[in-house]
Image (tube, rainbow, N blue to C red; front, side):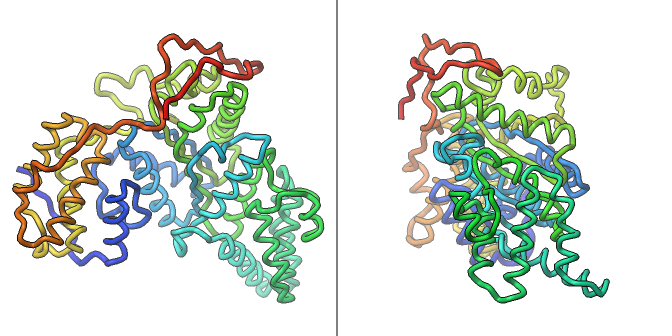
Length: 451
């Protein structure tokens, strides 16, 4: 018998609705994750250690590996919420065919723009925090200028001088200084142009020079350099650092063009090297992907020799032994006990934290789990996305049909094993050319995906 206790107090309707609606749609809730988090204590502890290192001015790199539907996106959102509580600024995005780490067609700039749109702080956890971050830098600079009795622009340029040593730092500092002029004179158009530049929304250098007097923009070539710049900047603004969360790494794995795929992997290698060597101050990266994306020696990260050597698992961490200090973090599967606790938490959230409003008793949870096990076996708790969705659907029906008994509905639940619709198995006869860091064929002509 498992005993489960819940924290006292009601759950806010906003959090309750966000969690329930997201789970019914099969997506990860943006808020309220703490109400349904179960298991994976060691993994969370490891990422908290990374956050502490970023706060201390260091850097961190993690590649979170888990099966499709195992909870990677939820885990990343949980890590983001912890980082926000520690006064980090976070940015997040899903990689896609239009958003990549490396490109010559605007895809890397598109990824940077998406990251900046999703920029979050503890005060604005849902994104759109670029303006508050810049305003905070200006405010702290004004405070320092008053205390020293000198001109505010002098202090701003002194504080930005450390950025000028980095790639693109001079123009970045000039753009931020332009924001102060707009702030001081009430020039709203200039202020808007500064924010647009910082969000990588200028597509040509001509427009940038015309609006701000700087000859560069954030483009594909400078994508990563400006992330390092922005990490330094947020620390100058009074935050603890920058955490970058990138989901759906499988979209790099699915790229059929070998040279383009390897160029993206080379960017991953560059980020990994900087983080491991400590040259990216106050900056952390958390990527997520499937085991195939990592271990496939034909198309995965292991197809790139330098990445394979750096991401190789600890040979001693086997037969029950674990190592959470390496760059690769494999998400442990949930256990049946974890799944039971999760169902109790979902029931609790659906009732807005009121035990008297529970729609099903404890025996209904057991019956639901037994039914799922009979349909898909252990997959119901190891890749629980579909299981969670169907349980919330069950609660919704019971909520809206008070005369229905839960026992009459259990057998009607049609649950299937979770499969990855984005990644069909590669043909058995497909042999990709060996990947190297200096040369690769232009196309994998024998690779086909079934969508």
